[in-house]
Length: 145
Image 1 (tube, rainbow, N blue to C red):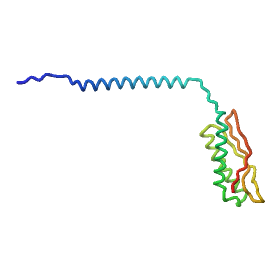
Image 2 (image 1 turned 180 degrees about the vertical axis):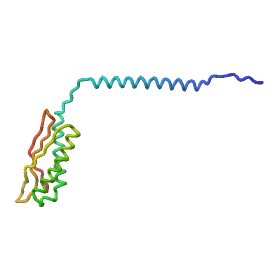
Image 3 (image 1 turned 120 degrees about the horizontal axis):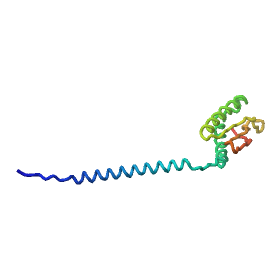
Image 4 (image 1 turned 90 degrees about the vertical axis):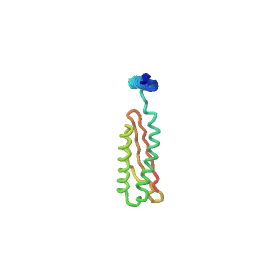
């Protein structure tokens, strides 16, 4: 009869130790990340949004004009009431997105139509955007031909 000697499973033991070390490292990383997050959230860092208002206004002015041109482009002959309706719809869409995305307020006021050789060629409006500390306001004419 042969006697078998019991050998320890060295490979299985090494795998278990590596798994234990990986778990400890992962736990330490999570605790460290949580403490860094708490520290950063408690830091008193004020982000000044006034530096962004001018660049946001420039983008808004360009995009608003493009949208108006797309909506009104071939409808200039339909009359001022139809043009004003399209203008107000465009404004309301932009008001919703600007205020909900960035917390800034936006308003566009229809002033009238611009003419070239007795032909309507654009819209005159007043654009305003602000954030409570600073605002930008400009009367602008969008060419729609």
